[in-house]
Length: 452
Image 1 (cartoon, rainbow, N blue to C red):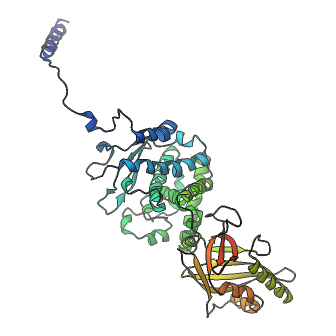
Image 2: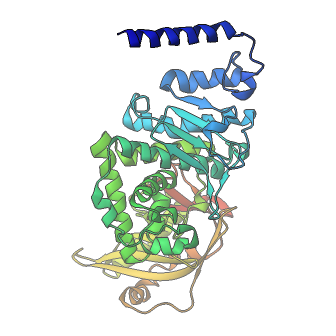
Image 3: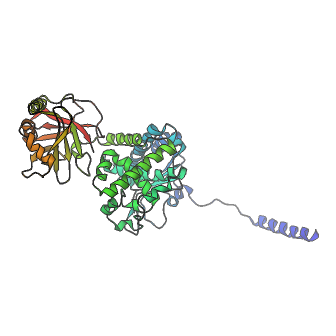
């Protein structure tokens, strides 16, 4: 006891001596200069961020440069203050609002990163790639290249929101993991050195991007985010361009994503996808002439002029005349379809039956399609040499009876555009109505339902 007591006295004495030597003074350091995120007087940007992110969603946005929030050893430019609100407007409108529409008003409040960190430039990597965004532990998303962001440029908006959709998929997966069966779809195709492999190779192996080859986790995030940002029209068109085996893989992955969102969060993925597209359409309305073609968008136009309302008088008159002629020949004309293929090829197909309606026939003809994606001006030129086969031979059988309609398609030029000014409806989706108007007479046109 005594020994311990003596040591206690020594310790107390030492403390007393140290205390007697203590000197107080003011620290000569400006902490505000070290950490600019210590905000004493909020500016208009801070107030806007509070009103649109912090208060409703408990999401902080850090845009004042903080070296500790970004990777060390990298030269990264701070964001321009004037760029913050435009960028975060798109985050709210194209990411948050669609999830609220598809998953409920509280979805983002329950599952979301609690912080966005903004950087002005990209993070450049030693393998030649650049990092446009990162997610850390489901808590923080870092968005780069804010200084070059343009909210009026659809490509710029898509690039940024694509990053968020990708990183947010990781956050969702940390909440509820996706099935391990997903990684079996493209087993053997994952490649760490993805930057050295072409996109065509990724497609051929059933990956929607090159980066998807990094790992199953990145594959799932790329699959989900690209489906959301492309929309069904573009996604389906790309899938149609890859080899048959890769098509099967991509369709399987699509179904895994759709099932995951439904099972894990009771979200209809296709509704979410449509809400994202509607938000993007507000940035840039879909241009019909830029959405036609294999690997681009729509690959089919289907029309039944006998039942479609508001077909133009000239075209409907020619169609009805062809129906009468076909009836005289013992056939019943049903409808027509255009299929837009690679290398500017368009295949026109008429469907008809025998008089009793018990046998269905198809008659095909190939045209060269010249489409100016800027102006929409389009011409259809019948190829001199047609393929062989039953369906092409059938066109020879009925060609004279369809002469008026055939001439309509191949004479003069058209302007490709939507028909929603005549028949109200949504544009840019599967099932939307597209039309080809004569350049010499806008009241003369044909239209159809657009699909893949």
